[in-house]
Amino acid sequence: MTELATNNYKTLSFDCYGTLIDWERGILDYLMPLLKAHDAHVLDTWLLNFFSECEPDIQQEGGNYKSILSRILETLGRRLAFTPSDESKQGFAASIGHWPAFPDTVDALNALAAKFDLAILSNIDDDLFALSSVHLQAQFKQVITAEQVGFYKPAPEMFDRLIELADGPILHVAQSRYHDINAAHAKGLDTVWINRPSLGAAKNVEANPTWTFTSMADFSSAILGRPS
Image 1 (cartoon, rainbow, N blue to C red):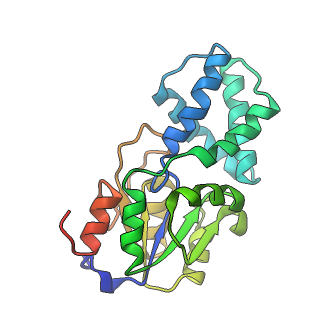
Image 2 (cartoon, rainbow, N blue to C red):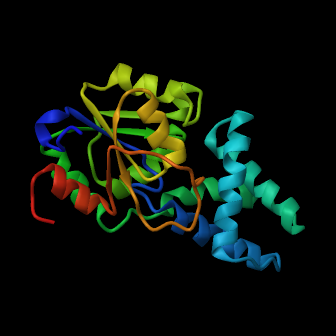
């Protein structure tokens, strides 16, 4: 195994949602009050597992991520016997602006930016990522979105675009094994799995990341050679 060291990589590419942004908290904070208003009562784990089951299938149908979230909410409504309003469907996408960064995200990105080019590779629309970038407080040399590429991870086209645009060698960092780790590995990239506690918004699949850390803080300390 290659040593995890600063001089082995030029670019660190990141998944955003689940890795840098706490999308599970954001999804729950928006959907749970909405469900309660419709007298629909579910567990957090049930809701996020429902999301993880629906999202890939709906992404296969195409459309921007705003429409993906709208259709997920429509599907949820059919399952729980309510009809979401157009306002609530539009609000789901807009809520991304309120999804928080994980507590260790900003400090880790700032430390890593001193040594590496940073890139984003995300299943999102450009304007929705702009809402999240405010919380990240980092400069990314490349921001590659599904809206730009026309495919959603784990599609190989997303990683082809990353390899085309980013300066190598590239180390890809992500929480989702389904969306990122296996697909990046298939393209020959070294990977870091940020194994954060999760309630299941991303599909749970087996994967063999090059390295595993439980937080961005631990990863940044390790690659920069600093005590954690």
